[in-house]
Each structure stands twice: as structure tokens, then as C-alpha cells.
Image (cartoon, rainbow, N blue to C red; front, side):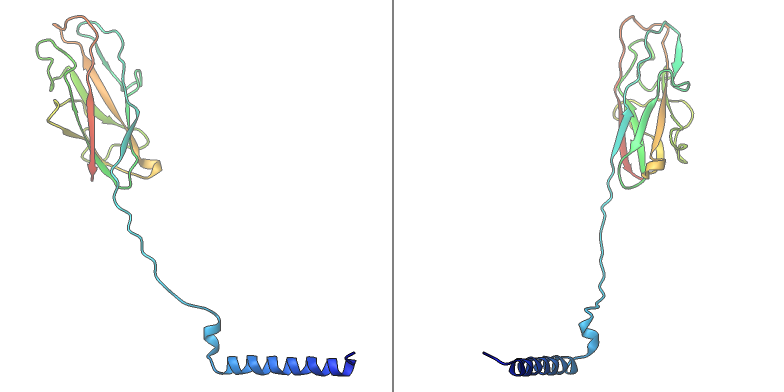
Length: 184
């Protein structure tokens, strides 16, 4: 059996060897390297994304008679809602297929018009804010300029005004409006 004196002596020897080992390790290196402090830089490149959506993407004027005029300024029916879902400000052009088939009904015509209206934000400088003839497919026209991308400033309205021509034949009428966005 090992006596307590021998056991105590072994513990002291181990402690002395541990202290000498730590001291020799610490004494041979600068103490600042033990902290692990270091500096570095990080960089990220975020590409521009041009993305729009139409939360309100159709307008139904219902039944109208010859020479009737209706628009979306009173929200009845509601105007198009154009929203910038990308990461940069955008300019948006519009063009459309013909709505009317009567004389002088082909785009561009005063019987079918558009204007940028306020939504979350006012229309940007350069936007068309008074009713203007909708251009035909193949001739896009800037309608909405500098639409922001932040959530509090990324949506405007595009109002539509229609007037039924005096020689328009009876029947359902429809037109497709194409919205195209590009980086502002």
C-alpha cells in the first residue's frame, strides 16, 4: 500500500512539472497570440434584379353604351396596381392590343388611354400623369418612371380611361396591355 506521504510527494511533483511546462510554453511565445484576435474583410456583390408584378392585373368596365366614358380614377373599377419586386428602381413602358374595332378604334386612339396614378407613392418625375393614348403593340411608351424598390415605396397605379366609339359594333371587347420594366 502507498503511504499518504508518498502520494502527497507524487502530487507535488506532478504540479511542479505542470507549472514548469506551462511557464516554458508561455515564456517562449508572445502573449497576444493566445487571444486569437484577428481582423479580416468581407465583401458581397448583389446583382441588380428587375422584377415587377401586377397585384391588380385586370380591369372590367362592365356594360357600356355608345359614347359612354369610364375611367379608374374613382377606383370603380380599380386601376392596375404595378409593383416593383426587384432590387433597383425601374422604368415601366406600356403597349396594348386594340380594344375597339370601329373606325378610329385602333391604338393609339383617344378612345383608349392610360395615366400613372398615385398608389403607395406618387408617380416619379418623367411618368405620364395625364390621360394619354395607349400605344399599339410594338411601340412601347414610358408610362411609369423611377418606381422605387423599397417596400414602402414600390407600388403605383396605372389608370385606364375608355370611351365607346360611336360606330363600335356590339359584343364583348378586350385588350392585352403589356408592361415592360427596365432598370432606371
